[in-house]
Every structure is written in structure tokens, then in C-alpha cells.
Length: 256
Image: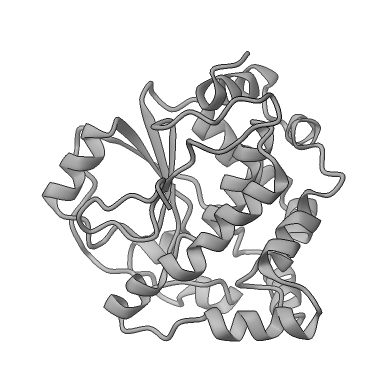
């Protein structure tokens, strides 16, 4: 957990740097940060983020998780969320980009995911990657084209949507699957303080029970997602420009 970030008001936040890549190098610190809902971040916390090099914030949430919306479409889709709330805005001197990952308009997809009890764990990653490649491509393109400096991306609890984007970034950098799985697992404990301050029950035990019924774990589910997965070809086929992929790899590993 030496990659964990303790900036004031940030939850389930860590640097993607310091992880072992197959090249023998480690991923670069300060390039990409993963995080949870930012509603509690104080001015002091934003100052700490700037000091660490953060210049862009990419919000993976759906519009109704960010601004109150009639009908709560995210809830209809069954995707994990916290109710929208007005809180401290991202400082004006940081770029902020909204790239909703879920595609909540596809209710048929999300009904299937929830009926099969895949949501809330990496169990849904493989089918999401298969069905929603264009959504993944949009996020990766936004990350690649962010202004120079650190990029922080987040969703609600900072675990599953954020975890999927972290998986794509780290796999592109050639990070070992075991290290990617271990990074995902860190959220199990790291998200608990956020649930506590939000007054929400910890979802961890229920998710662990579903995984146990299937004879697997979160780490094993992440490794299964990565098994035979050619991330670069996947993203090229999804429409990401090869130069953007090279830029991401260079930012994260100092390699072309």
C-alpha cells in the first residue's frame, strides 16, 4: 500500500506507479491515479493532488450520478452508485472530462448482468469488454489526449469501473496479471472508509459470497479476464488510435 494516496478527502485512491512490468521496469509514479467519488475532497486535498502533479480528472460516472436527474437511470440499470450531491467542484485550474463508461441506456445488458449476479465484481469484466468496446475506447482516448501531467480517473466507489480502466492501462503497460489482480483487491479494504462516511453498507461480504459460490475470488476473476487478452489489439479494434496507445504506454512506463 505504499502507492496509497492520503490527500484530504480522497478515498480509495492510489497511484498506478511502482508496479512491475514484464519489461523489467516498474510503472511510473505520478502518471495515473485511480480514485473513488470526490465529493469530500477539501481545498487542502486538491492542493495535495496538484502538488503530486494531477492536472486532469476523468469522471467515469453516469450523468445522473453527477447531477440530480429525474428517473435515476443508473438505478434502473442496476449499476453501483451513490446519489448525486452538490459538493465542492473540481478546481477550475484542473481539466475535468466526463466519459460515462456504463452505457446505462442498454437496459437489456444490465438486466442480464444483474440477473447473473455479475455486477459489483470483476465477474462482469469479460462480457463488458466484449459488448462495450466502444465505451472502453472512449475512455482510453480521453486519457491519452489529456493535457501533460497526472491523470486521475474515478467512478463512485472507485472499484469496478475504475478497476476496469486500471486493468486496461496496466495491461497495456505490460504489468504482470498477478500485480493487476492485487491492485484490484486493494479496493476491498480501501473503500470501507468511504462506505462508512456515506452511511452505506459494505458490499464486500456479499460480493465475496457470490464469488465463493462460483469457486473463485476477485483476484482469480481479474486473472481470468486477462487470460489470452491482447489489450492493444482489442483497443485498436475498438477504434483507439495506435499513437494514443503508444502515448499511454510511454506515460506509464517511459517506453515507446
